[in-house]
Length: 176
Image 1: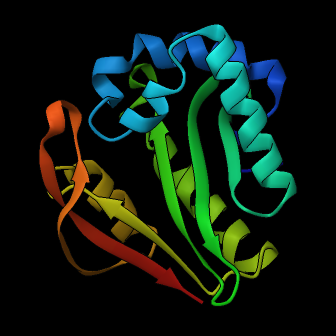
Image 2: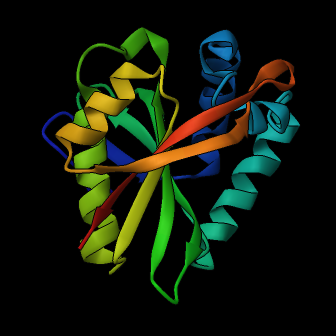
């Protein structure tokens, strides 16, 4: 568990899989461009539970660290943050996050990203964490830069959005 002033980041647990499913389905249109793979494997309650079990196992095996983002005062799930595809020979991993639309615009992403960045670097002793951000995602670029991530370059045709559209991605990283 990771605490900030207003948030608690909790490792994935089955007890909030249902809340995740409901909110994730509600925000499909909002999230589908950049979390299409997650949407494709969480279409039902059962699939979402399997997805959570898989992420819990990944955490236990040090293959990826998946957290729900909760409001400290109400314990309401407001988002997700993770580092995955970890290469322990460096060590490095790819970071991703989202805040559900009902909670966007309140700087929760800044708070969560800074705390999670420190968790990865200090507690998990990762040397490098990186994020891929779409060039048109102005808010995420601002969050990354505010949290000390630096733009490394452009990855051409690196991600397939909905309807099979290929898009470029910006590569941001934070190193120890």
